[in-house]
Image (cartoon, rainbow, N blue to C red):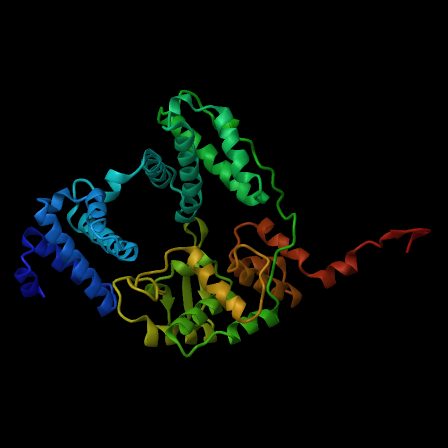
Length: 408
């Protein structure tokens, strides 16, 4: 490969293109994809040399100038994706003094990154919490930038905050609206602590009232669970991986984030246990049931393949690394429900299996303490909501409904 690149006269770019291609092979990209990205990167390297652009000078503007040389929109999009990947590789491998993202980032993006760093390092928030806060904060700062033409934090006032909240939460249910208000309140405290705003505006964010246990949890019936499992095609790589994930949801009640974070070392085959990384850095051992263990072992032996990632479940398309987050489990569950003809009435569909497991347990006579132990709840009040799902048991304690002529 190196000899071919030398013939093409890539000069200082040669080593970096070589390393990039090796990186693609290590990530298990398909040969056709590697060949395409390699040809695009070579063309960009030759163009950069003709323009007198050095490796350390690369940034987003040069990428845009390169792809605009051709009028085909589809070709330009393909080139831009490949070159952004090449630039990210350079930044990670060599630590360029200024990345493409760094030069093209808006003030809103830059401040959002500082806020995320604050949440991780000083507040110690869990990764999933950061994933919830960051989009809300970026949305607010982008809104401010669009309205004022600048962040203008010194002149930020309660009226601007209220206007943003009224636009964003007008048609949302209570919980998403509450999360937006909590995130904006946290941002305002951060800005005040850093001296970005002259006074603490967090009290200007109205609180969204929600009521714990105000509803009945959405669940999947035992028949629906078995239908979903049966409808999964286990003759394909995707099907075998998804079937193992669905069993972890249905049989053990794992959360989506817990499945994503599972690593190869978390499966203890000899003791038939799984080490689960739960909420708040909580570690729990749960039993590795026979059918779950068989499905996981089949996936590992036949489909996972070699990878630099230690995550148990990997993406099916290159790069073959761990799943990106809890939402990726929802993206697996939704098609599985559709194949079985199940129409979910819940936003987080992966959690339906967890609710379904608790419901099956309580209908078979399990106590609240036993359910809380299986689901690894830290508070009994969290488990108490499942007392509502046993409708037959509730009927035995319900008071008669008053009717005309007195209670019947």
